[in-house]
Amino acid sequence: MILVTGATGKVGGQVAAQLVAAGAAVRALVRDPATAVLPDAVEAARGDQVDVVRGDLADPASLTAALTGEVEAVFLVWPLGGPTGAAEVVTTLAAHTSRIVYLSTRGVPEDDEAELAEDILGTHAALERLVRGSGAEWTLLRPGGFAGNTLLWAPQVRAGGPVRTAHPQAARPVVHEADIATVAVRALLTDDLLGEAPELTGPELLTQAEQIAIVSEVLGRPLAVEKLSRSEARADLLAGGVPPAYADGILDAHAAMETDPETVVPGGAELLGRPPLTYRQWVTDHVADFR
Image 1 (tube, rainbow, N blue to C red):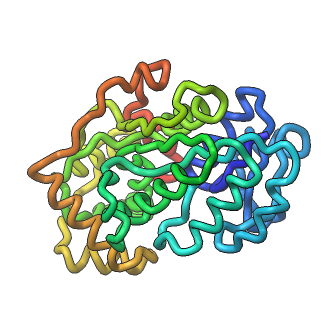
Image 2 (tube, helix red, strand yellow; image 1 turned 120 degrees about the vertical axis):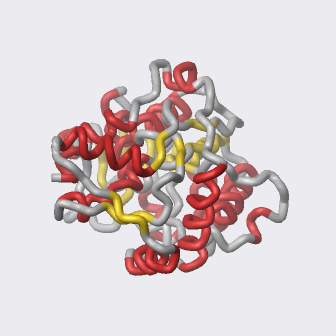
Image 3 (cartoon, rainbow, N blue to C red; image 1 turned 90 degrees about the horizontal axis):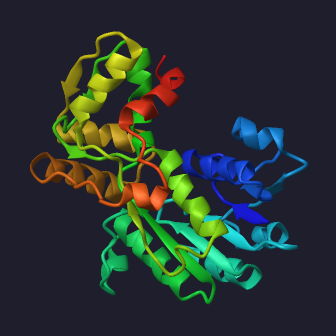
């Protein structure tokens, strides 16, 4: 039995679906089993191969029931907003299971002061320390930028454009959530990645403008790009519920990527057992979200 947190999200949903395809028993942790929207393959296996249980990482006491029985491993997605409460959550997980696979991010600093920063990297650094020190077997997944984050453009695309961004020339090799899930499933079901922190990116370096062009090509209609000021972009992020420190960190990172792009991590095919998926493939897989 594998407990999957974030099972209604992009990565967690893919992890649950790929575990089902691999024949593993899955327990999906959701806030409300009656309304949870799970991937089709997971929903189809519900009640047989898949248990859907109520629980909330914001309420560590609610996890105990979800961890009863033979839960051998946990896929942990932390809802970014700071590490408050994470120590109790990780302690609870480690007391009931032997393995934790944590979804971190590329670029987490290794120094002891990293987790003091009130930003995305600081939160992940704090969680990584807790998982490493939990006493459970662990793997820390460190993917680069998620292709799924470009779904923020979907409402603008559906409206016909333009697509608004402060840094159209920011370049990074965004990664398909299916690839992240493939590595997670390998870490959950085999011993191949125990005690490791594998990095994973997409196979190609693309600017945001080039990503938007690919969306346009897949949809078969033109999309203009509108360059925003930093203050306009920050306001958009805040309106979307992103905490101020995180919004500033995102915009700082994107500004840096205009002159110092992220690199493609080598060895993706060896880690996945197949070539990494392209951004074009990701758009094709999510074309309904943009129409």
